[in-house]
Image (cartoon, rainbow, N blue to C red; front, side, top):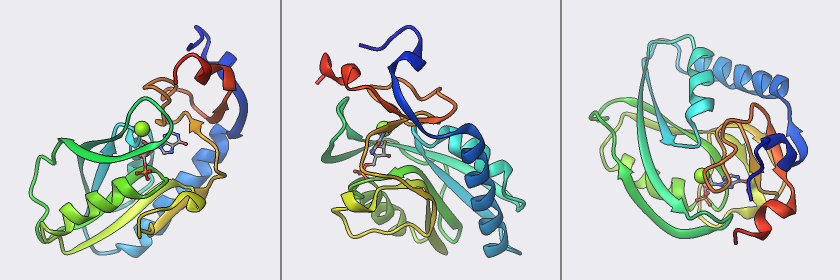
Length: 186
Ligand code: IMP
Ligand code: MG
């Protein structure tokens, strides 16, 4: 059950608002340096990346376009199903563009593996992956991110865009849920 007050469901805060801000600023600076003289197209993977994307794009000092893609790989549980389906495709052609895929978290890697495959087939000039969080211990697919905000332990985290059963995306920090939240749902 999700409480009326979201904070009541949080066992601990893993990454504070201030820490998130510093992580995102650092990524923005790196991208700005690496892509000097170019235009970038940021492709946000919905819905988990929205808050990260909104902050990251403001930390990038380059001519920048954005687009979004929605795929589903998770049900309402906390484990990857292995199935990935495109629910919303990009609005624009990416051929010849320098694209950066923006993800909230790289877990088994199955979602990004699939997305990278379809996007590479559309012949962008270059393709890189920027993930806010990485759980390397959980990796099953052969994929690595080019930009990683922070490594996180093998725990299910919520907030700053990341959800559990579509809730908690609006928490301004990254937290770990109390076990009681899962008990009546799985
Ligand atoms: P993967 O295909 O296993 O890498 O799954 C990646 C997707 O699973 C992410 O984009 C998230 O939507 C979701 N996910 C994986 N781990 C977490 C987590 O700890 N909290 C919330 N969502 C997660
Ligand atoms: Mg999700």
